[in-house]
Image (cartoon, rainbow, N blue to C red; front, side, top):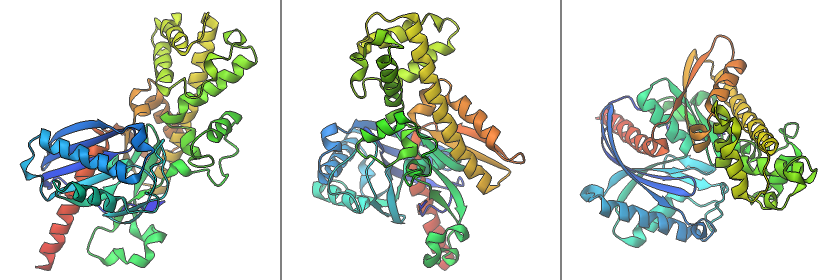
Amino acid sequence: MLPSYVRAVPNGTETGNFLALDLGGTNFRVLLIKLRGHEADMTSQIYRVPEAVMKGSGTALFDHIADCMAKFITDNNIEAAAGLPLGFTFSFPCRQEGLTRAKLINWTKGFCASGVKNKDVVQMLREACERRKDIDIDVVAVLNDTVGTLMACAFKENSCEVGVIVGTGTNACYMEKIANCEKLEDEHLESDGFPNEMIINTEWGAFGDDGKLNFVRTEFDRDVDKRSINPGMQLFEKMISGMYMGEIVRTVLHKLAKQKLIFGGNTDAISQDHCFPTKYVSEIESEMEDPEGRSFTKTAQILEDVGIEDVTVEDCANVAYVCKLISTRAAHLCAAGIATLLNKMEKKFVTVGVDGSVYRFHPTFPKVLNDKISELLKPNLKFQLMLSEDGSGRGAALVAAVATRINREKLNKKK
């Protein structure tokens, strides 16, 4: 559990222009958002983070981010870029020491840029901008994508107090009373003039790293973990997220082929790590949901693309069954986490903001998730799942806007 230092959700009085940066996977976004109360106009651009940059030096990574920002500002003729408030969504485990101070704990999701661990990522961003000498920004907040998702949904629905990501990685955050935050006892935040609540980042992807989930983990989970770039870490995430779901399916299929139960016992094509991406899981299950999809045309094509020859209908049915088992387990585990938060909060009605590629694109994940939460929730509590329409980019700008508003309100009180 990590404090976010975000103390409030939007109330509709925020106005002005705000920049946002969103780094959380292989894609990186730069955004300009113009807020007029409950109205928001957004301009954004997606940039790629090359694998060489993901695994190179931290300096090169932040220089790449600054290059993207400069290009965005030029391409969109943003003349007022100097000094614009900026919210930075940095979706990796961080030790937050303030709204504008966050030190990386460890990389996830395939990133391993050197020289960033235990460093302040906001300072590294500022230094990269200073090296260019053509970007003048005011970083007013750093946050992760779950906080951004919560804020983006709260802009539309004020009852949103939980944010969840189920995409390349997975994480959740929720609104907690500061009096309940033991890590903040020495900071005397209850009397600082700001709201007495704070969004808490659970970093639930690391749940189970201490062995508490060993009773759930299978031989396939252990195999995937052993071959990952961070063995023994992010174990809950490795059972849920899009980065690993397809690889778990592949690992199961490889064992079945080895036992001569599928593919005529041929393991060659399915032996290559990561040759069965999670998008295949979604596509295969989408075909299963289609009443006309039982011919397995799409599934057979996917298996042929992987390199499997002489695919049979029985092979396709077995592969679809494995996909269903793995995705359903992922949804059930995610539901257990969300239900635990809702049961702890004990609020009569809470909106849960959700984003991420698995939630967006898997055909049955949202319904399975919703049904299992309902099953696990205390009978007197109610909830709704709300898809974040534009991800954590808008959320970053909203955090910047709320921080600007709260600071302005506090200054006005002192006058």
